[in-house]
Length: 101
Image (tube, rainbow, N blue to C red; front, side):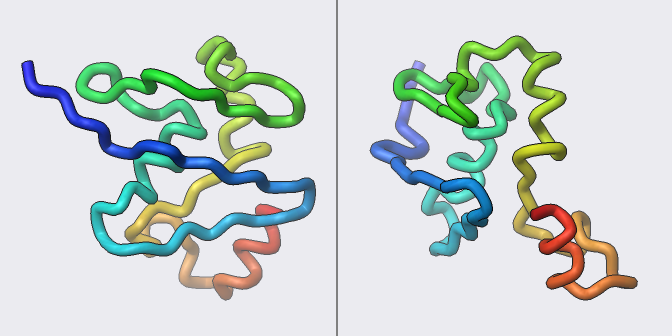
């Protein structure tokens, strides 16, 4: 079985009231990093092998699936690479992003 690292050495801090937008080349690890924070990496084929993900003083990697479901969307959200699948064309992008904040 051949293994490879999708991302390595990712480190960022988002303070209360801040929003993070990840920008980069295709394949650089933006989606994998965001999916990891949300604990949406499918095992297999993917696996978080080391590190920590902290949110509001709690380690997300230790949360049960039902606890993570409460956090996703309510506290932490992701707009996927294809914005038309996530955004409502009736409202401006600014309105939708500020609503999430």
